[in-house]
Structures are given as C-alpha cells and as structure tokens.
Length: 228
Image 1: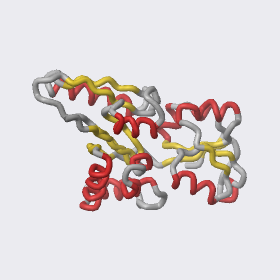
Image 2: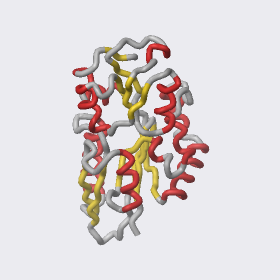
Image 3: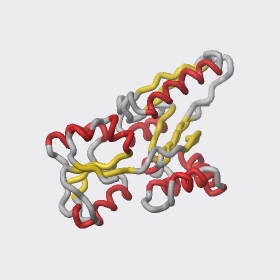
C-alpha cells in the first residue's frame, strides 16, 4: 500500500509519501511550485538524496520544481490521483480536503513566527493534522514557516485605501482573495508560474509573496514598490 505525504507551508507546508515493502525499490515523484534557486527546492533535492541513502536505495525520488507537474491545486489533487507522491503545499490548498488545517493562512492568526512554530508542537496541531490525514488519506510530515507575505506593486501603498482599484494577483483561495478585496482591490488568481509575465504585460499591477519568492522570481524587475 502506498501512502502519500505532504509538507505544509505557511505559512504552512506539508509532504505526502508512500510506504513500500522493504525489499522493493520504489520510485517517487516530489513536486512543488518553487524556483530551483529557492530553499524549498534545494532542500527537497537534499532530502531526496538522504532518503535514498538512508533506505539503501529502496526509495529513489525525482524532484519536479517550478510547477512542472502543475499548479499548487493540481499537485494537491495529484496526491489523490496517484500522479505525484510528495508535495510541498500551502495550507490554504490542503484546506480544500480539510478546511480546519488552513488556519495558518488566515491573516493575524499568529503574532509572529515563534507563535506559529509553537502551534506546530501543540495538541491542537496534532488534532488538525490527524483530521486532514483522515479526510484525505495523506500524511503531513512537516510544517514550516516560509516568511511573511509582502505586497509588491507599481504604485505606492501606505494604507488600505491605496489599494482601491488595484489589479493584484493572489492565490485562488478564499482568505487571500478576501484581504485585498476588503481594501477595494481587483483580484486575479493567476497561476503562480505565470505571475512574472502578467506583471510585465500589465495584466496585473501587483502581487504578494514571501521575500524569498519575490527574489527568486525576480518580481523586482517588473515592480516599483514593496510593502515590508
């Protein structure tokens, strides 16, 4: 029986993995949407090598970065369909299987990174990850903090009202859509791999992501301002 694993991001990320007999060699696919220069990819490659080494070659893992196997929603679905075995995913997408696990992607839920990490060691976290596993059949192997999300834009933004009429790309999940809409922005849930081109062509004027992603995707080349 193969069991899928998820690595949740945050601000949470999750991984899903299969179980095979000790004598069989199992080839696995590990997918994520991040660029090859980002820590999520370099550490995924490291983990794949370590798993192969520590299982004496019983598991071999190919890592597919940069949305090669689909958008974040696609790779979450791929766990169920069996087209992928391990993923890194935001809790907002994992929440489609079990809504309570998405608590980490709602704004102002946690005071800071330490508060979030304390949650991942709590009984409530065990309860919610157990609920996700029961609902989806996938196992969350790790939860990590990837940084605060920052908005970049071609216009200065100092207060909520400055977003009135702003065309901003956000992930296609409820809380990410609700926040800018509450400030009067027009949201566009464009696929992650297409954001740079959308900014360059003026399809959208703004986007939001952690600093590591903003740097790796070179959004600074097509944006004038950032809110820190």
